[in-house]
Image 1 (tube, rainbow, N blue to C red):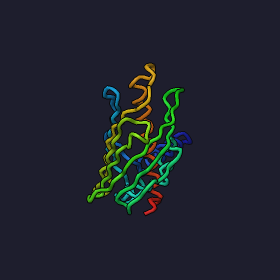
Image 2 (cartoon, one colour):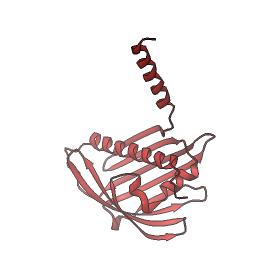
Image 3 (cartoon, one colour):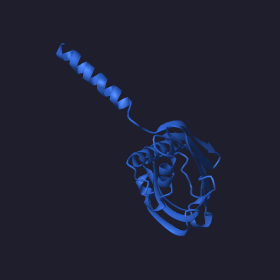
Image 4 (cartoon, one colour):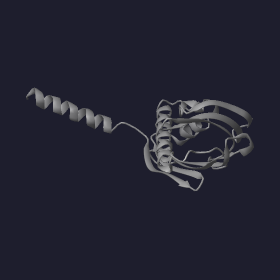
Length: 191
């Protein structure tokens, strides 16, 4: 066998091995602008047990592990694992413009193991915010569906168009999903 053929076969084998590696599969990702609010929806499949994925999302004290945009987290109150009030400070950048965003959310776990977070506007830089996470187990994977809508309480410069904001939000969602998958594969759900 010629050396060039061996290199090609080695490369093809490596490509097959990498394509078979376990990774989160984003089934749907949409970000839209509605007048002054932004909505995001993501449907993702993880190669990990649903309990581990849920535990990672609910590990509020360690949310910066999921995304580098979260700079600070403080759990202000907690009632078991059913309710928490969580304050975050995030830094969001679009092009060269960055903004620190304060947000306080009341997060509740329902009887089916799903989460709902409602922003407390008086303590946040958002006029409105709601997010929901649904989790369920499939035969070989965990699924998570996330829907969020926020309305900023701050001015967004007109040259920062909806398309740029959409791309920044999509990038952030993809990074967060990758980090959840990495932590789930490592078994670091702190469950």
